[in-house]
Length: 458
Image (cartoon, rainbow, N blue to C red):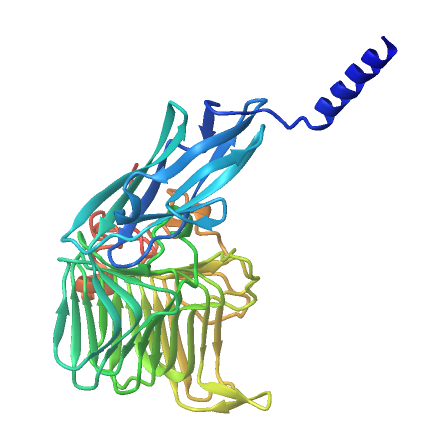
């Protein structure tokens, strides 16, 4: 009897020692989402990766008989299942109270206009089947990789333009970008102008330059592409009713002989500068320059600059601490820690807000006091500690922007900028100054406001 009892005890111990966690098929899986959604995807270019988490919330381990992409290898979608690039996996072990990752991406083949691609990830456990949908919206684009424009060219709104490396406008050639055109640029991509660039947006249909990362998380992030660069041979360059965002430098202008015109533009979210100019001439009308890592406007080595009816605002908060004024204009460069005079500088600031989170947001700096450096400031609102000579200008009073955190630089009814703009300059330049950046008529009540936006009754 004792031997039988001992045998039974040994047998039970053996069974216990060899016992493995119970695995079951038919365990109800849970998912991080029921649809893996890809925002607008450029055709011919793969999407960003999306993640699906698969949870086993039960007390039992699970064996998933088959995980697979319904469209198989012919699908536009691709999977990585638990670290393995494959569209099909069998006998996938998922412990109790654990999870696994499935990574999905998609490439949409060229097709005219928008198109929708759908597929599903299937999870089979015996007779139990669960499904997660895949949904991508594709967008056909004019894909530019390394383009040199050698003759007069027009880009219109029929298709968005996606610049992967660069587009260059050769000497003697021109590029006109018409109303409503969207230009997307890949990381570090840029537009290089040796000839002529004319951006011809409209009040109700602007031209947009932005990053090719269309996910909502990237919409305000600076530094995602290079910028638009105008070289010394460039001529007849103008930017009207456009938005330039998410780059390193919005517009760079190097020793261009004629005047670069910028009117009714938003140049925002740049990691270095909204506008950078070297010994050139730039006019900025009725525009917003905001959110730049170093400068909203940096102009060195002289030149002529007009800032009329605009808002220049800088509260940059993307990981670096800005110590530079929003607007810096000099007639020199630095060599061996000493300023070296280059060319005369002439600055006109009228009906413009220059404000931000620095103690001084305007630096007008000659190589030597009075050395070929002149400025005129009137009917503006400035944040500065420099004691500039001004006319009818408000110093160091908050402009009362509507919502700095949301980059809304319209003004409130309590703004000191309200009703304080110079009416005469607006009347003399109606094409550039009569209508604000929201198309409001500055002359409607006879009391125009300082800045790019006329206050509007809500």
